Image (cartoon, rainbow, N blue to C red):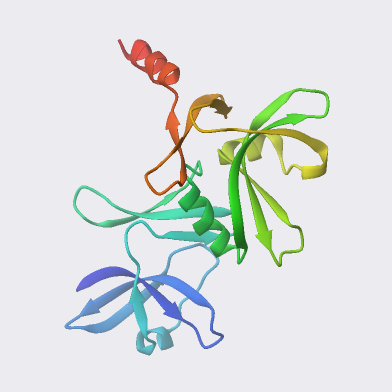
Length: 197
């Protein structure tokens, strides 16, 4: 009944939780948790809430999710499979409470020279370790597991250069404000068009 929206609630413990909220005549009727394992209580109906906007990132466990609008302009929550740009990496680090200094893209190899994947190398301040690695494609993390930075050889990727993540070729680019982003490699796009023909 009423209008359903996605909202952020500040719990008494000062922890933030995102919930589906049902309102009727401006009054909260009910709240539902977004993720399995989270709960909602009737007290949430009286707590101050703030709307969640399209494009925002959420985190649950080791995974990140983006708020999107579908064709009917309804909110959807989609799991990220790749970290496509520097802004998304910085937002993910913010959710992990990491203070980012720099972000660069690297290609990782095992100490025996086997190509592993593309990853974002993030330099942080005040963290336990000064560097954090995040795979470009989370499916590589499932295949390769967690990688210790001390056990890889890496090379930086510069803009206009190609690299591979989860078997897909990308080209690193910079936008108008000098932030990094990934574009599908022209060769990869050509292969996809050829497959569809």
